[in-house]
Amino acid sequence: MNVSYVRGQDKNQLLIENTLGETDSFEYRMFENCNIPGFLNLKTSYKDGKTYLAYNISSLQDVEKYYQNKEIGYETLDVFLHDILLAYDNAYTHMLSGEKIVLDPKYMYFDVESKHLFLIYYPLYSHTLDESFMSFAEYLLERVDHTDDKAVVLAYKFYKLVKDCNFTISSLRHGLFDKEVCAPKKDDIIETSQQDCLFNDESNDVGAETAINNDDIYLPKSKGGIFKNLFKKKETPKESIAPSFDSNFDSIGDSFSDSFCDSRLGDISGNISDCVAEESHGFDYAPDKDESYGKTVFIPQDSPNLYHTLTYLFKNKSQIYELRHFPITIGKLKNEADLVLDDKSISRIHAKITEEKGCLYLEDCNSTNGTYLNGMPLDANDHIMLEHGDEIKLGNFMLVFD
Image 1 (cartoon, rainbow, N blue to C red):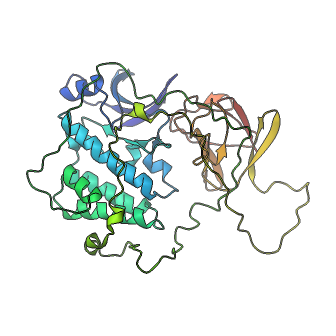
Image 2: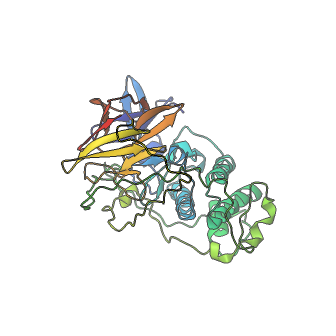
Image 3: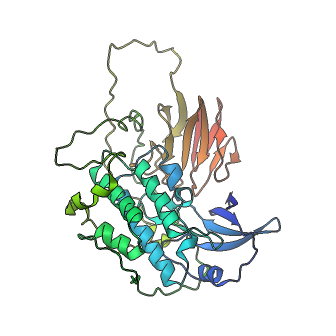
């Protein structure tokens, strides 16, 4: 797929070139005129004499990049798998091919607050269900949180069902979320009620950002690095199940506790418009304790700062945030962002600073109001190196990098 990204005045879009130029097929018309739950809306776009399929990704994060340095826990994995199966159900209900659904983490987008997932339907794409699901199952085995027993169980159960069965979407759902796993039948039929098409021009915008009504800004401390506990063995009771990559997958299935299979989210509409909600004010935040040990070393006040910093004004007071670990996410969602900026102009996850070979880079995260570096807007998927004195504009905030 020839993929590019573009930022408009009110939306961020992922563009895939339509090499055939056809836009009047049944599939195109279905997506042009219907909001199909579980999928990014598809619109036709024309640029430089070429035809593109445009998918609105405003305020959404792609799975691969977001979890590049994070692990997927049970609750998120549970939502992801429910949403994937629901999306395939909806595709079949609308007489669309499952082989044209892109099940690649790089092009799978989710709402960072609700965790609901949205897939791309690309009419020129062609991968069998076996190929798509096996590739995604292997990805989950790598990124699942191996200190979370329930997440490990669910990821391995998904892998086992995809690996061992001539599966259908219905049999996957039954095997993952029902108490008893039954072998799929050859004539298994997807049972999904017919969806009514909404013939309108509504896009999948997640809506305007809303303010978090807190009096003070929160500046979380470093959590010691995201790989801190990756290889640290978690102490669990002997009865606890925590299979490793070297486990025999075939021996896992029957040993799962029923309690791990009972958790259900109920019916998930998956429609992107349902993901918009007022920002929650009920998050509890307690930074991890500093785990530095050894003799304290005195540092004179005039000593140079050991870390790069971001300096900005908040309520007419200068604030300094030290960049102690990477990546650094900036936004207004307290349980997800490292540097939390309390303002309605800031997206939940607005921008990110990463480190590569000693250099720091700035990225926009599909924010509503955009990210500016020295007055120049960053395009979607830009990766710009930061230098001393650079000015970063995020909504109503101006931050100086040092």
